[in-house]
Image (cartoon, rainbow, N blue to C red):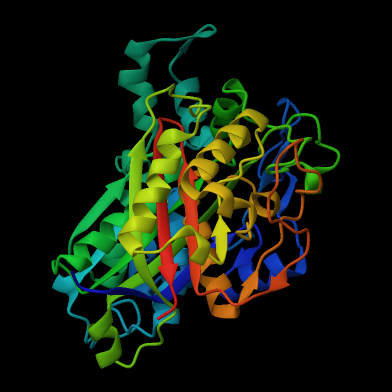
Length: 431
């Protein structure tokens, strides 16, 4: 099996645009969870979110492609921005930047995780308004009049595969491509698939990870109905998401994207690429306990971690940093800790943990920001803080601190579980 390394990192998160900005703000203690500004949230119990900074997608795509921006939903734009950052960071001159690209595009894959893209309520409501019969929707009027208010390409904004579609077209990639839609686990699973594709020799490079925005009325409503959100700290959003804390009261929706450029090791050396880390292990599992709740015993979640560590040939006593899921939902955190103990045993209380959702919220399929952060922790030999983990539950012992700390990081692990029961883990090693 061929070795696979990380040669590019692209991030857009509630902490900033670009991997460098995200990392610097993460270490400075900035909190990206604030009162929602994208729309008026006053009608919702939870009114906070991790919103990405404002940007114009046209600044991140070639002039020749700007007409296509009209059919980009927010999720697609986030993926496009993260991809631009990753390509530039990797020093790759794709079709987006030059007419004479030297990339072997047939050997360059793309695996981007996506979520359920929520419709723009303004344009959808305008169309539905024309199809009303009193206070009800008349399907006959909808077919005759309502749909005519939507652009013929309207649906293309909301297909999950369009994240990878736009990225591959912009950069001219023609290698193995796929979209994974497994909620919060989408990014990790997409990175894992790209990893295997390069290992098997079906590609030499791949851009992979995920992006999503739940910062809209429909995204917020769904998470509210599932009872996952903190609705008691609207006045203090900076301390609202408290992973593994005794006072954990729910998570906050968010938006963002994290993409990695993976590359076969010898290929990266031959082109003189800077190598951040080696992706050495990947593991996945399925929890069939309940669609909306992880199994309290954490067994399936722990199995994904065990598989990833075994794949990387790394024992738990060698793990220098772990970026866990850490949603800040008390019952979920308890189940995750059970899984971590199952996977790591007594070593768990020694492994430095960096649950960063306290600063960015839950980015769902955009959780590719977390593997990217794990790699940055290795590159910078710094373990991010657990800013809102200030009081551990009774009997729980974890290696967390509310301030960043310097430490040699030779092995970094990132783990995730999702609605639907998918679990995944990735192991990065210093080359």
